[in-house]
Image (tube, rainbow, N blue to C red; front, side, top):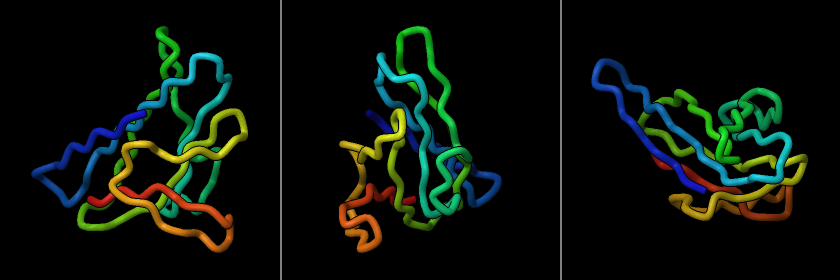
Length: 98
């Protein structure tokens, strides 16, 4: 798994590209506090090599909690900037700092 951050010079936005290697998965999405943890809001596209990839525009200067949803199973990003405990889910969430 990987995260790529591209900060825009023209506005306070960061294009965040999420990449998830999940060759056997049918559906992968990224859900976080920017989209109210909506598992349908940010679906990732499956590439020919079996990797899922998608880009989300997020406001720079913020920290966001998120997880991947791989065929209905919630997973953290191994290369997250940090992790934050969630009492609601009773587990850690991935954190990206922009």
